[in-house]
Image 1 (tube, helix red, strand yellow):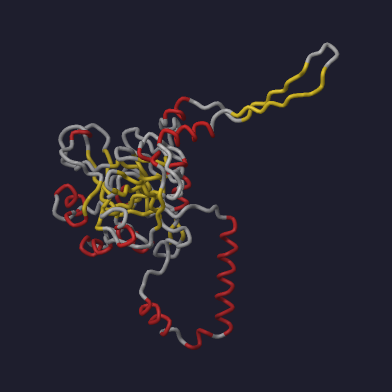
Image 2 (spheres, helix red, strand yellow):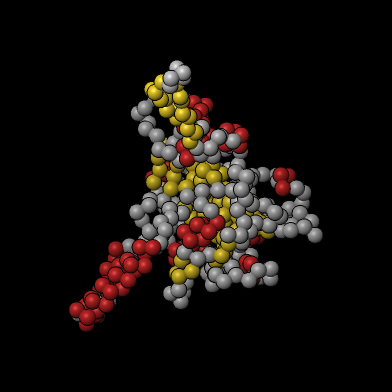
Length: 366
């Protein structure tokens, strides 16, 4: 399952981190679209269901509404975590059951998910990683799970036989010195172009389903989603028996989003467990969703004695609090007075930082 995520990138950085190559070979980045109903996305190390988080979808969903003109084939829009069916009657919190996760085994059977999937409402939930808790008798150890940084989103996932078959189809004349020189030139150009690019973390791309619900006829629509989950792979099963359905290549992402050309029965084959993930233990400070700090994802040493969540939070508070540096002078004036110079470094800790409140700054169009 997936009940907590981390995503600390601002909207513009999210769009740049999700650059992709379209069918014409042109590099694009998704367009950013603000959440509806005045809601906002708050970057955080500790995101729980009920928050608005970044979701990638086809721009066709926006164009069909006739409300926006987008320049990209993909759009990133914050959506409410916890799907609200379009036919729901009542308030946001009056759902009969939890919809944070959608089990792949029954997603084409339950009307809550079957109806939006048949409408092509397939999406990709973006995060830097997610948390899961390993149960051991009376204890629960949190883990942070993410994609390896050294593996590109565009990694060739074909098996060795397919790759060898492609290599065997290369004509002999294509291996001459002139073509080799051309290949070297292209590689040199790519390397040169990447020198000025900012480095972004490889985002975790989770398959999801979303729906659009209107509380009333005159109100703005509410976009909400569920994370599709599957039985865990051997890599993940030691922590939990369920995991998000991860899309590991840009081709898989494109096929999942492209509801117009890729039918649901074919797209459903993309939903399966993967092994290309890494994880490490983190402190219990992440247990409380109000705690939003880098310590949430920081790796801990299992061999060292565990600190309580309270002591970890206090350590973080003290490390970021006001620093005072006192420089005492040894010079004694004629009147017998000594001078002391005080230098204040940093900013005072505000109340919202102490209590773990979400940041006050709201991210909209950037």
